[in-house]
Length: 419
Image (cartoon, rainbow, N blue to C red; front, side):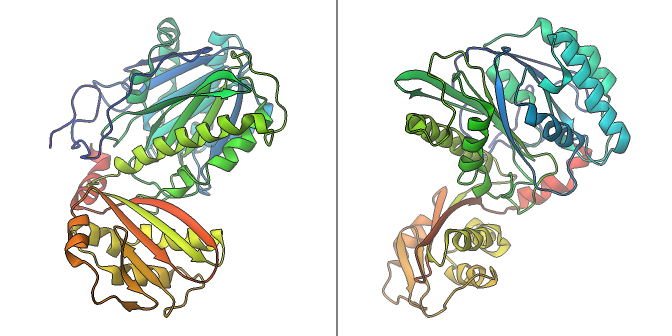
């Protein structure tokens, strides 16, 4: 284990599940820049600007937390316009619970970027992540906008991924090529997130770009659908952030045909690739869960509905007893049964079956006396732990990704404000 260096927060150990940052190519119509603005931390990147070509459309999904930050209010307000020219992101201060001052910070920042990029403020998206309750020094941000503009470049993806981090221990990015009606397009994104992660937008920011030519309505429908099985199916600690933001930008630089219906079969490959990009980024967030040492993959089947299966999977993924059992490498299937029962969803004890690492340890309401304990014990030492539950009540199914709970989570969150 080793400590983070350079532009990262050096007080946190790099996750043992960390994924190397890939070499991301330029996306036509996208330029990026990141600098050290000293908003809360010193000696690290913390302010980012993205510029998009004038044809860019946008879709977004935001936190369902009832105490959202000022940037969330701003983005929700402008999203119906469906166009984007710029994105401004700061790390360190979330601009949440800051009243009129928070609203002013967003408004003045958006106006300053809009003036620089020569567009209406309604085409400038704002995102913030960090500590709740501190005032954002927006004048410092505004002062740095000319420098950001001068440094805009299509090849700054890794620096940008670093600049949006808070308690993360590694930068997160992913890219796929796919096609729309045999025309090649790219889908590429970056994300941040480590703690305060739960379904209903699991503190998380994610910015995805594509050169595809698609209207905002199609983008929004695709995003609404694909977020369900990706970012809304992960959980670190059951806490839904006040700042969760997922934005999808389409620059329209590819030569694919105009498509106005998101159910058009010509979008099949694009929709699948979008889901894969979102899933990979979401899994990186879980692999960077605060204090994480193990990924937990939970599969539920046989529930009365998909919605019921999802809630049961959440109950297992959020259970401190299940998460600590995984930390202790203890195949305590009884805790899984407990978590199923407390979910408040239909379940029959005498039909319930549980598997650990693809080995059934309990079936039809009772333990299997002769299951291979040695293989199960060996599985619990692996980095990815599989838990499968069959309720034998119907055809409902769901997949949830979670992580274990360690002393590291307490250490990080017990000292976060001082870091």
